[in-house]
Length: 529
Image (tube, rainbow, N blue to C red; front, side, top):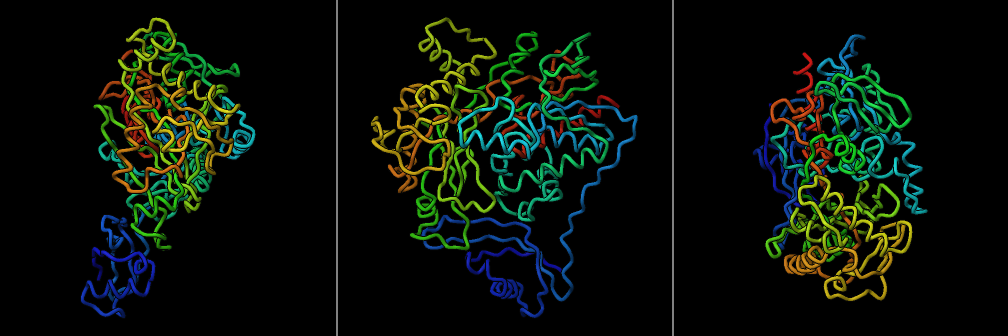
């Protein structure tokens, strides 16, 4: 027979198979010899008690019967007929790739068109960016196969459980090569070292089913006739006729927003968040979160999540990376953008997190008026994009050249002091001690200062000069929204245009973007059929 049980157990006992078996047997009132095995259904860490960290487990237990394989039926992807209707998908990030996979299951032929390179070719450009500070505007941490997520960690946690099937997304990642743990951990994570192989497997499946994936093809124009996009044009001179166009270009494709504005296609400003990356020694975060001097080897590097209201403005942690690395995420020369990622083992000596402030239209408008000394149109749809770009360029001017980023020790940042020196850090292009008050808008700088002090009261030991603040974390989400109808998911002006994912303003992270891609594929199928 089988039984589902809940256990609360120490990390050491959870990691010891024989001890765990005894605990299972005791829970069921059985002898250990009667327990043939188990599958983990859910796993989470409870570190709220200062005395003991616990592992919470939900287990499917096999009692006096053979242990069957975990019942995860793989999704079927048929070979498409030659006359299958085509869907052109701009962008090979999670929204685009999962839309393509969904199209295949719905009998549609996806043609995925990506401005950047495949994952293997991308590595060389990222190496040059990290070692030499040279930004390739078409191949970087944001552009290329798999999108920003491929080399930015692969966190698979989302609160967007009403957007679609999280379970299907996780099962597809598992089907294409992710570890089984993504199916049951409370905060599943793949790791930048493993994601490229998974993304490649997805692309091979799309191609094996009859779809296409094209690289190094940058969308530069489109023709509109009778409220539909009829043809799309690329920088290499090629053009395609389209019946349905799914736009999944990501939050950093500024040229797409500018193209829409030039062609008078409706877009609108969208509030976003901007700030810094803060990096601590991982040992400091472990000590705070696990209430210990040395982390139990059976526990993963600790994470945290923080939020505070400062003068009615939100400041919060974003994309926290235990055992991680701060990466240069600029998409053009002359700007500094930082992001974070972790390998699958999360075994680097640092913990970093975005720490960002909510940006609204009135405050950004006032800032740009004062900073640029020119009139600013509050209703301009690219105003928040201009604000974002201005701050990134200020960071470049205050840095140390190329991608050397401006930085300060945490307490120095909060006490208006220029750091005399900087601690060792994970950011490979290098850091330059700077007054970040010259980089960040005053309201952002002041909000972060008060936020850090408040976080230090919540997490004793967090507020320390052993931590470093690096500017600027500015690509948290898109500063532009491309509107769409709630039912058909089509643009209100253009009937066959389907804005999708983070770049269109409808997702935030890998899983929510993937679910949005699936949703729009289903909408397209309904329209075409």
